[in-house]
Amino acid sequence: MLKKKILIKKTVYCILFLYIGMTVVSWASGRKERVKVPHERISLTLYSWKPGDAYLIEQLARSYRQTGSNVEIIFQSVPENEYDTSVLVRLESGTAPDLIYARPYEQGRQLFNSGFLKSCTDIPGVMACFTDSNLRPWQVPDGNVFAVPLAAVSHGVYYNKTLFEKEHLAIPETWEGFLALCEQLQQKGFTPLANSASEDSLILERFFLPLLSCFTGGRAGREQYEKGEKALNDSRCVSAYQAMADVSEFCAPVSVSYHDGQNLFKSGQAAMIAGTSAEIEMYQDVAFDWGIFALPAPSGLQTVVCVQPETAIAINTASKYVDAACAFLAWLCSREGALVAAEYMPAGYFPTGNYPFSSSDQHINEFLQLSACRETDVRFIWPAMMDAYTVMQEAVIAVMKGAQTAQQAADTVCDAVNIKGAAR
Image 1 (tube, rainbow, N blue to C red):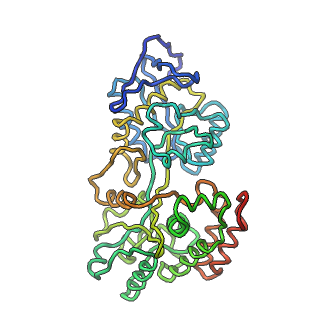
Image 2 (spheres, helix red, strand yellow):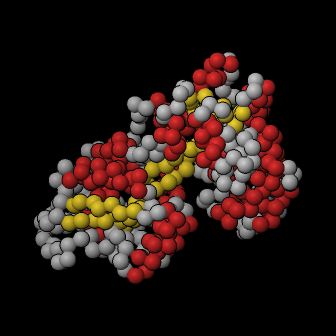
Image 3 (cartoon, rainbow, N blue to C red):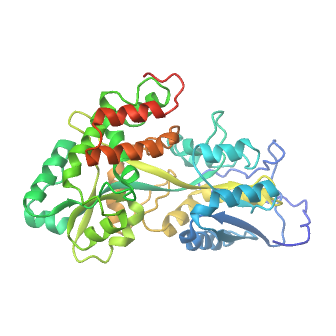
């Protein structure tokens, strides 16, 4: 960051988009004016909890400079478990970077409502580059967008394709078919699933929440639970907990952590593991061919693929270079910027913009295909029911261990979650 103040000249600097030719505007004043960008090189610091994104940001910065920009992006990261506290302290003390990775939903909204994040709504390309569903995690109720979406992860079931072909096993189309497949594998002497009911198995995020969307009707159904129009212990929720009880006999022993489960799958000892696309690189060196399929819905319901928003870039309202930050994000929303982001995204993270994207990696394309022809939604509790996280995880583990019935688990969660007007 330069110590001396940058002299703002009166020269007009226009950025033309490849597909819409819109002029970047000045948003700080609240009215549309041409952005005045300094001729001297300036640095924007970007703060993140994802050190693996350093190369992505480096490539974005390089490509952006090739457009004639005088802005460089400096990437900084801290461990994820320290990030939220660190960024809040720095925002409150006025020492936060120009750009920050924002959390979706309530955490990001709180920072925006506190005046720390600048509205991105009027940045050219933001409203055109993303669908309503991809913008929603980064919006407040009045429609203001507080961050520009960057990446998401998808959920699915990794399976040993070599084993499936050898044993003449088919990809299941329904939950009932999935259980039948697990039984076949078990009878043949294989561990069907590397997932387990251990406390550190991530069973809630990796398995139950994606499956719950299939039982409760995707986004439309989720929103009914959020509004209290349906109860979290209705028949569909109870059926989802029962599904976890039913599948538990095909899972790895309760002593197996999620990391241990990944190794079970890698070694070929387990035939499948439910996980996220972010884990693709972990399985690139295994000794067998593998693929991905979607956790299927029960017969008569639509399979819903969980695509979870991960990261978006927000602007610190206290930055000295708000105009430059807006111009960079406008470029990121252009076709050119979006395709650069897609090209250099870490393996298993997917851009959320409207521009078509494909990969030379067959496994990445398999994940993309999961959601190409199916309804997608986010993790069931993320948008409005995060207070259910711990109690729901405990309930899932309890039914898998046989310590609670499906009805008891659903009742426990329903009683613990505070939803206005809940239909209980």
